[in-house]
Amino acid sequence: MKSETRVCKLVLGNGFDLYCQLNTRYPDYFNDQIKGKYAQFPKWGKKVRGCIYNLNATNDNEVYIPNIKLTDDINVWDVLFYYESGRKNRKNWCDVESFIYNFFYLKQSHGDTYFDILYERINEKKFASNDESWLNYPTLYFLTIEAPTKTKIEFATYLLTELFKFEKHFGEYVYNEFLEKLESDYKPKLNYFFNDVFTKWDIQSIDTFNYTPIETAISDYESSIVNHINGDFKAPIFGIDSSKFSSRNPGYIFTKTYRRMTADFYEGETIKCSLNSDFDDLVIFGHSLNEQDYNYYFPLFDYMNLMDVSSTKGILFYYHIYDGKKERIIKNGNVKNLIEMLNAYEKYKTDKNDEFRLVDSLSSQGRLRFRKI
Image (cartoon, rainbow, N blue to C red; front, top):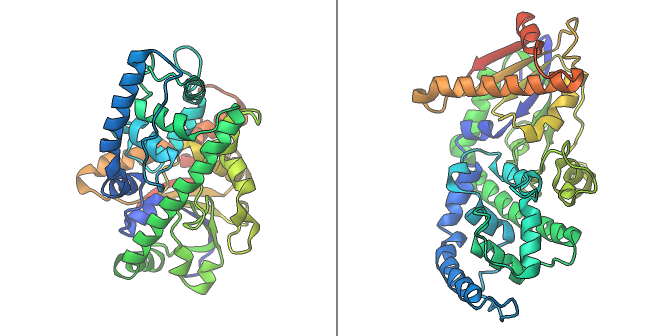
């Protein structure tokens, strides 16, 4: 990398993987599983629905419930995502985390969350779900057979243990995709980005939200400054924002704060977790700027004195047009997401509900810029 007067922290999101021709989005993984282990779901679901219909017809909670088995590599989150998330939501990298967040946080019509409803239903073996269209018989059945539910904490702990399995499978998928395209696609794109596109800064650190091992594809110097924010392919983390959860909430163990504090890889020396460092510009490429990651960006903005007009630190957002027919949509979407995050940060710092001025201030000072690759 070429040395210049400006020093930056580089933040990479899944868009960088896509730029390097990797199919590492959640929909890519899901579609891969449809052809693999998820292929058993339609036949299994049909058997389960027949079983549940018979149980409902007897109106007897004491009726013996047969165990209609799935293969051992299926976990509860496979079932939840397949039956509950809805195909229209399988579009963005953040869907897994958004689903988990909604699962523990969103209140339904009578004031309970999906987590609360499932906990109640599977304890009572109550399969009828006419009042909640979100719940499907296969999900209730699977949890009734598999899940320990003496307490909500026990139920949440079971769900977290199952999430470990889902994350492990996802990490294996990402790593295989990385190895398959490492020489043909990933390295050429990566080298072009660093050597031809990204030439105006010294990179002080690289924070990546991706699970792909970028450090194995770059020079020894560059690899030493790579930080995996949410784990790598060996220990990926799906987590949710902690700002709306008290530590007493059963869902708190799914927050990124808790997950990072308890993850084994953060105790090692190969993956560093320092967020603040000496840099002039924050350069972002390919990150969705989803609300679940505000807890990463806000401390950085504090360090940059973003609200201070005397600060010279700025933000540069790179974007890539992966579909020429959607160029305006892609650019507008990236601009919108960044503005929403900066507005949220301004509200967090000033407690104002409207009259946002931070974006205006940053852009007029030349501290907020967009650039197409």
